[in-house]
Amino acid sequence: MSDTKAAVTVKEMARMVGLTPQRFHQLIGTAFPYPVYRLETRRPFFNEELQQVCLEVRRRNFGVNGKPVLFYSKGHKVEQPVELPRPVKRPAKKMPKDDCSEILAAVRGLGLVTVTTDQVTAAMRGAFPNGVNGTEQGQVIRSVFLQLKQKNRTGNV
Image (cartoon, rainbow, N blue to C red; front, side, top):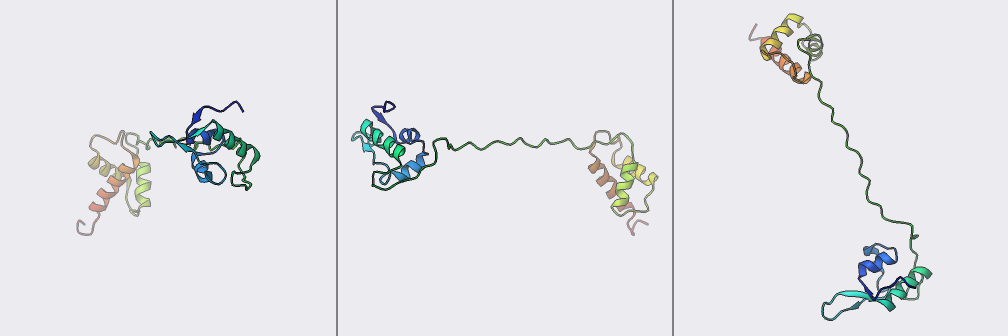
């Protein structure tokens, strides 16, 4: 087999036999032979002879311990997780200049059923003297509701 080198690391040997480094480490000593170590660096590597043995184990599905070993097909690769597109954050609904019909309906829905258009308009002017242009609808409803609620308390009547 011509795809061997003079020496390869354990990680590179795992790549050569089509396994993850973690799975290859699990099978060292049972299915695959132990690597040799360089004395100066104490770093494990596979020489050309051991590379041939590992490639033969992978080809025949028969480990160095004399037992058969099953591998996933070579085409099976661990895929990187697919990054899903992030949901688009839509801008909050902005209020038109002086439309109080939606505000009136919302305030009535919150429990102030006897409120009139004039009261909502007055509360909007009190909370937003410069107008509601560009203000989020939820903020306008909240402010108007709180002003009307405060004015209609039993202590104020």
